[in-house]
Image 1 (cartoon, rainbow, N blue to C red):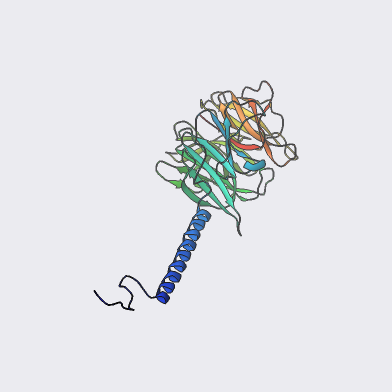
Image 2 (image 1 turned 90 degrees about the vertical axis):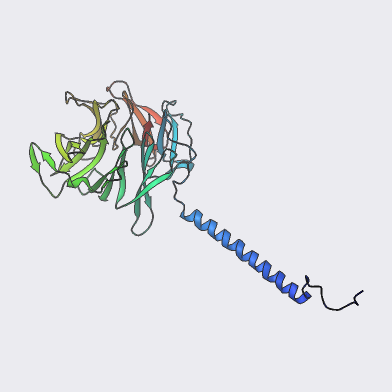
Length: 344
């Protein structure tokens, strides 16, 4: 038998050494916890607002931007044919200044604070998750997606923030999501006005709407104090004026009519009124909505239009509907909403 010894067994360390080892291990664990926590918080801060969504782009639903309450500034949805003014809504969508959706694609225009403020066009998938982000200059104003979801267009105010005056400038872009080709400013498109090729430094475009073939489109062009409806061709990359005093056109689902806002007063409050133009006869008629609508109306179906109007407090907006044939009377559809888009 071996005699007792004061030497520690090989697998044990002296007490002072064990104490130091425990302290070092504890410190390492704390540092690891701090590092993991910091990484998680950093990821949360850099995560885009549109990265997750509680709902998808489902047919039969109306999507819109909330303008009051907890969902103010965020995308919400309700049924396409809800009870007027009593629409149960699902909230929790991305934060957008302007929004539009069709098929499996959505377009969200964001404005972030800063000096100067930053704006972005976000291309979202069916789950409203970000697919592409494009940096923009100016204030978000109009957004449109073609029926197939392929073609996107947006308009930004480069200077000014209203069409009511003459001191504004716009920049309108078109994106082909299939090819990824981006037209940053469509002012470069060859324009034919009154049968002649037209050039002018004051040309502005806004309010694009696409036909079902993803090639033909309509838009507003302004020059020399007048506004015109233009018909454009993506393949030929050319545009031609059709008539005057047409702003923010919106093509019906059957592609036979255009809703638009027409200037009925030169100045003052509510200078516009909603009209519908028959593209076959080029005859127009006013809608039952007599209040001034400064919006690019959206078609809920071939018979009904939706648009935003200021609420009773003059700040938030509500979504109203009216018949496309000019009959009947307007109805309140969604309280506290704007940028309506019906997904079919």
